Image 1 (cartoon, rainbow, N blue to C red):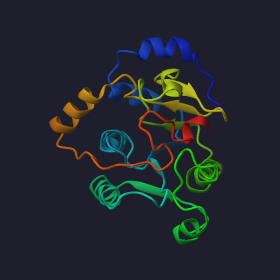
Image 2 (cartoon, helix red, strand yellow; image 1 turned 90 degrees about the horizontal axis):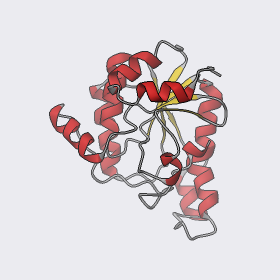
Image 3 (cartoon, one colour; image 1 turned 45 degrees about the vertical axis):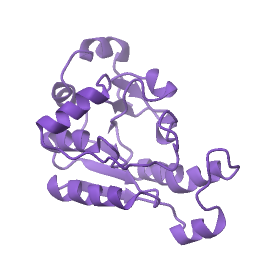
Image 4 (cartoon, rainbow, N blue to C red; image 1 turned 180 degrees about the vertical axis):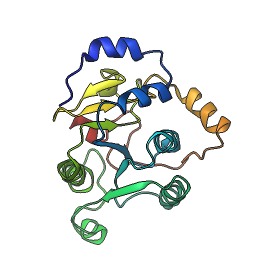
Length: 206
């Protein structure tokens, strides 16, 4: 665990540019990951991280239930930024999942089991394998109740330092960044774990 004064550092970093936040964080440890679901604004964090650390491990927990356009978006970003992808997915095949619990709604009693199968267990496996000191994420304020309680810097339950360089950026800010930098947006992203936009996906509860 990297022991820092998070409260003071969050105040200091509040108005820093994401590039500056990333450059500062990278000095803390070389044992780091960045997570992605290849969601709507994934091109922003991934392109920025690849600029500062071309060899950073990119952890993708593929639920197996993404839209075809998301897999296309992922393939394009992986190729364009030469991402060092570490892909994790359920130990059960999509066919097995479809044949047993399918794709349950959030009201369905099977939804917790589904979340465990396709997102939580693969992510725990990823953390166990890499045991990072630093975890770069693209969570932002105003996304969910949980994320509103975070900040640019926070700790996971396991004591991993999480860095969210775009934490205070709005959708308007991100859209402008995409346009200015000619980056793609994944318009059709759907997370079967969240289902609803303001619902937590699970890995940030870890």
